[in-house]
Amino acid sequence: MDPLELVRYAESECHSWFNANEIVPLILQEHSSEEPQVISLDNICMVDGSWTSTAQFSGCGWFWKDSTGKIQLMGTRNLRRRETALQSEAL
Image 1 (cartoon, rainbow, N blue to C red):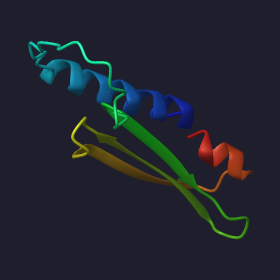
Image 2: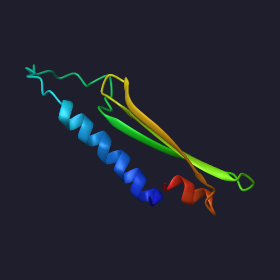
Image 3: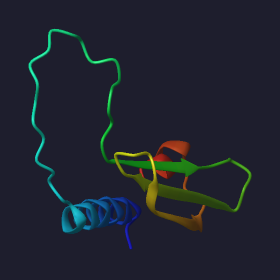
Image 4: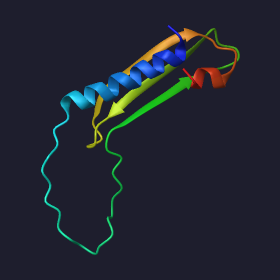
């Protein structure tokens, strides 16, 4: 499987899992002049890669956190070393 395709698949799985389990709460909003004190990231999917010029392998990993900061899904993969660090990050 193409590395970029793998990342897109992982991201798609994150979104599909979230959408399948999404419950939209009814929120009554009060009018307030105060600025919010907290920034919410809601759901977030993070992807990273690992590469060194002397290693035989490179790797990639990802995880999905929900709006409470709890990790819902994660995964890793070990691959033959790519030619550059950028190629590993693009996995």
